[in-house]
Image 1: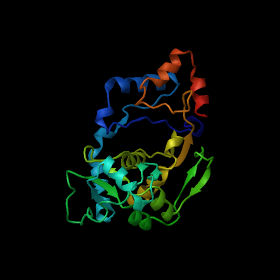
Image 2: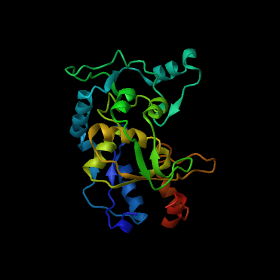
Image 3: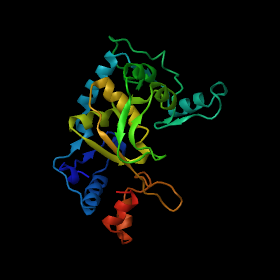
Length: 262
């Protein structure tokens, strides 16, 4: 896709979760992608080198009053979201269980208040969506889970109800996937983002952040996922050598591309 547009394919190592970053796993990424016929300029961008940029963005969002501190753990969130007054089973969004708002008021941060070291920072989606609600949309050249393609439009009400207050900085990490990729895409002048269909709904979070931070919105192409015989998608947490396993079974690069619809 990059070559067809006389563009450049860029590889980024997203290693902010140090517990899941291993040199041997990174080496497999390079080896598998080169086997697929991909090449990229060196050095690659590493998210672990960009923590100051993420901190600066959090300060900007703090100044806009759209962050709050959250001390809830995963069990707290699931329990609160499943409480009888919340309507039973918790609602699931692109970032997991939709946050029930437990710390939204108590964790509000004043502009002069420093970030707490023992809490995560969440985006107050209601305030954020109101500040960035004019014509929320992105261009999709692939397809979402239900075949969505072309100009994808959504409303502030939808992201408030279906996504909620997402984490922008984990207490042990200082950032999050959503914040980091938005900033990295802008820093690398990314024109087209190619990624798995499981991230289609998360794109709405990224558009909100792009609006708040004054960043451009790339074109997105979400492709199908490779799944096993039971329909479960392959993920590195299950087997970091998934592509290698296909290689060992005799698959060719064209077979892998066909599996994801490229």
